[in-house]
Image (cartoon, rainbow, N blue to C red; front, side, top):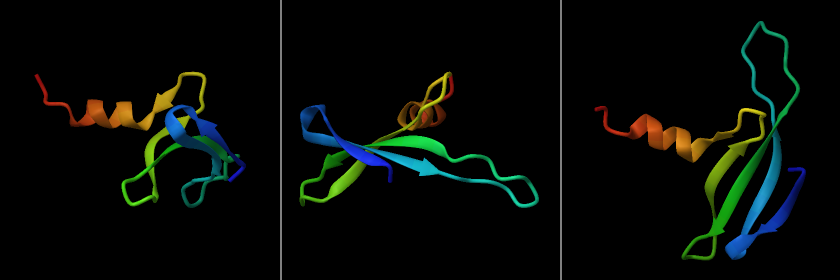
Length: 72
């Protein structure tokens, strides 16, 4: 984890470098993901969203909503 900052509404946002790759391929530089955290009812922290900081932008929750939406 690179750092953690307070978010509006009492949440936290953690900046985490993530490195993923496939076998037999050169490793890429780590990508920075922002994890949005909220405090759960029991006082533990839960991930509310994951944001991939890329010029095109990517928010995991929006992607999953679209993926799970009923097909017209």
